[in-house]
Image (cartoon, rainbow, N blue to C red; front, side):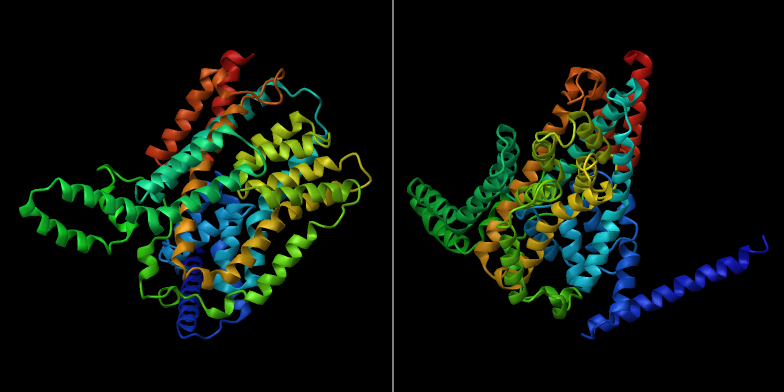
Length: 518
């Protein structure tokens, strides 16, 4: 009790000092004064230090966390970017290969505090999960060929709960993104088309198709359809009403397609899902005379120059011309290629990495699925799975497993972040073009549809048994559907956090083993 009063005064003094420092930094940014690097690093560390430990649930959940923290400013904290900037960054990160949520965090910090701060945030974000996955890889190396039966039940429960969490996130992202009928159609298109085929070029092709469709619809086709509808109505109207209809039609001709459809496609009256996930950039925001920099403290000196972006692009594509030496750099080349061609984030990386590391015999199918089940329960980016695979790939070689983990992580993260930084250097020019905004709206909607595809793919390989260590459908036992339902309902309707939902799934898996799995 004697320490209570001094301790409370000490904590209060620290809070007061932190608030004064934050207000001082904000006033400097508002005045256009460059904040010293040390202050920027401290600010970024205070806002991001816990993300590597609490960001469970994969990219869909990560985007919501980043939105709440840096756009909404939860807890009365400073807002780093506005909604429009966030939406545009989301479209860029989803439209480029690599880890979507990692690129998003990197770009947010890059805009707010500069490149060095963004690199620090990247390590804060990735290191906890990467260290954990490396430790798991070391443990897996010492496992026997057949795991204990409770372990299979535990891993299956983790997978089933993860499916529920990803399904919640997919629905929340979709409801946030749907602004009109065409965006709804593109989400359905991405979800359905993604189920039908799976190869390197397919997912980026789907997103390009979605972007072109949106650009064509809002740029030309919608106005043609509206003009044809008005002409048809005028032919069948009473002559007295034609003058009124003509005056109304003249007013409607100048309405934006997105705005018109938004008035037609009103949401159904129900309690909205509290999702802070991204939505598409709209032309209404584009026409606004208010610039992003007047609403958000985003100094110009934190932008990447176009010349730097060109150099990065040249180095990025030139790297692909190098011939990789045997095993160590063969591993790096495979991970680098995966990071270059994977669109759709962590869930999409699963089948591709399976062919890259299980096919050549570097990692067994059983070990691959063990890591897959565990990465779903780990915080941070799902691309940390490459750290696990890299360590296992070099376990029987002359190289250290730490070196393999390093190669796997760097190889898969580097391409996407490099491209995101390069494109961001051009973005302040590209964002002024309406066709680019329309294209990104379509890419965004189609990419969200691919999240529903990830739900199905995880469902199809989530059930592990000694006889099916390569994975089978969770539908083979109704109990896993129960686990998925509990995970979904708990998170969507009762606000159960994703980490707790995944732990509950693991416990329910062990309960299944105790009841019928022996």
